[in-house]
Image 1 (tube, rainbow, N blue to C red):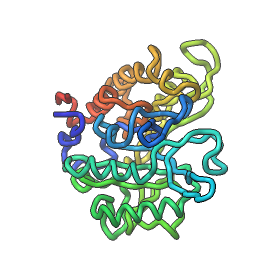
Image 2 (tube, rainbow, N blue to C red; image 1 turned 60 degrees about the vertical axis):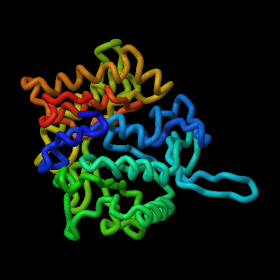
Image 3 (cartoon, one colour; image 1 turned 180 degrees about the vertical axis):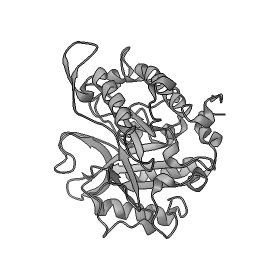
Image 4 (spheres, rainbow, N blue to C red; image 1 turned 120 degrees about the vertical axis):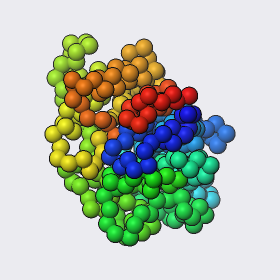
Length: 323
């Protein structure tokens, strides 16, 4: 089995909340010199665009959208992915990545010849919601049938099966997107934070930040995921907390990332997040730890090695050779 079709090994009746999915943090912030996309080292979080990330095995894409203005006399405004450290307005203290339309087209192209796979876009931290809606409707008109729209009745998306998701792009949006422009009938589903479990949409739990006492590696107080040690502690704390949650109808999102500085150097360093992943997954697999299976492990600079490790956490693939 090849990494770009790893979902072919999943039981078709598995529900979304039973899966472990490789995810891309700030998936839209990559370099594309051909199109003049050059995010700096403090913002760039991925090697390449959505299609190549999907080919490497990633299936969940964390996306933030902004309205990029180009031109002096004849101005154009385009919905563009990016990461900005001050999000009170579009495009302030950060960098742009690729356009939202490029990401959607990449997803459609990937899915068009891979009937066993599906992709999730989680879109948040976005101010230009009306422009996002217009771009999505343009895409849906040009590529009918790609966006997952589900049944007419209310549905907790965590209960959707692999069989029903295959070949589709599932779109979920945070509460900045209002009902005026976004409807489940058009394939625009809300996502919430646990303990809020929607009748229609998808809920996540997880820990992104928080005081965690002393870092076991350096003996100093850490600040959440501003250090690799803190990021690991946060991930473990999220797993421990998820064990206490009622029911299984929401997803545990693990933020496997170090914040701040040169993202690529931090991620790929000898003691960076990529090299710590194996031990974390081993701890999850150890029965005596009684840790829950993460549903999404979002990380920077996804590649076929990290995605393969995560994909093999699925019980259906544990003994499968993924090349």
